[in-house]
Image 1: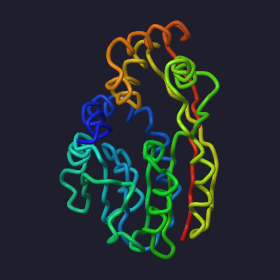
Image 2: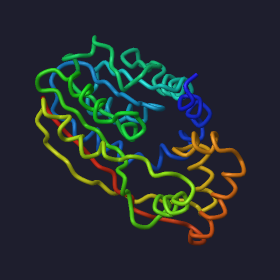
Image 3: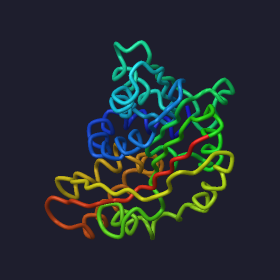
Length: 253
């Protein structure tokens, strides 16, 4: 099994419980950006537990909706969320390389916080745009390299700096060129408030049920403990509220 998929399998229930409610405002932002749409299905690559479902069915009732995710654990929770709606399907698969059957077929492609996890995000974005039918819309929200200058994400970045080689973020500059076959309508940063009970809670969520799960799994408990100590040293005491900024890309074919 792919190590990334395995890590997200293990994190799925914690992710659903902790991060899905906190990410909900960005999910709503992505869904709100889609209207109006032509006829056709809606595709949700990197769907995770499919938190987009409520907003999509509210805005676009009667649509076929398909979520794709590499993690079987995430797909299981997505299927549970969609239970009882015969128009909604969640499948295990590689969202970075879409099946050719989607090409030119979709009324919309929407993805929230999955793009930055893919090996070649710009290539994936071009493939998602290619899935649109004429008039179809793409709405993608992802975490950029600079999410915030203070807050848990910034503190974690500082704690990781001496321990982990920074990832190559040059792909961010290739995202707009990757959308050359469609019309880019919006490219902006969207912030919403997010609150955590305390630094210890957010650290546990980040490393056990969030994006650092694969790294902590690979490096082991000693690494996790050293990282925890540094994170807590840098973090404020008590309840922690911040306003991270995600990048929103909206395009139309």
